[in-house]
Image (tube, rainbow, N blue to C red; front, side, top):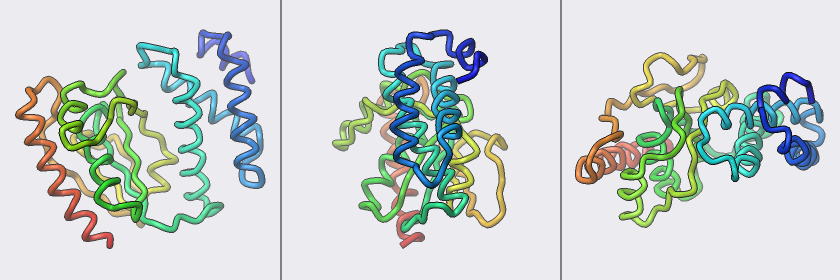
Length: 213
């Protein structure tokens, strides 16, 4: 690990934990990525998440999840891993409302027939509490979800990229299907308004599932 990483992290106490994560993921991706590549992704992922995290207790755990997902996406985009189902990426600004609702709803509606990711161009520290409440009414628990920064690897791995109010922040690659869903931002809205946004997203998700079946 470079000194630059240590200065970016600002928490050298986590260095040993992150190196253990790197070792586990290097074993998982043996034959696909070099250990140095895996370590770089782990420390970059930690740094990206740490920029907005209010509570750092769970950062190592979320880092392992985030880095593993990014490495899987990178392997798919490079053809080192085969994706047996369509890959869909939802992108909004904070990854705290619309994109999280869409991802959760698509995961349910597709019943494993579509792999779903979400990300934000400027991720928030936490999910919007009203969004979490509105989704819990449908039996979907988003309380353990966390906003994730938009990275090039997940865009490259996606077959379908759906943007929701994030403008031109998402890179464009040939051969992918792009859609922009013009929907209100639930941030700061009351529960009734968020329910309406949720239901509008749900309708679009159902149409999306049908188009990918």
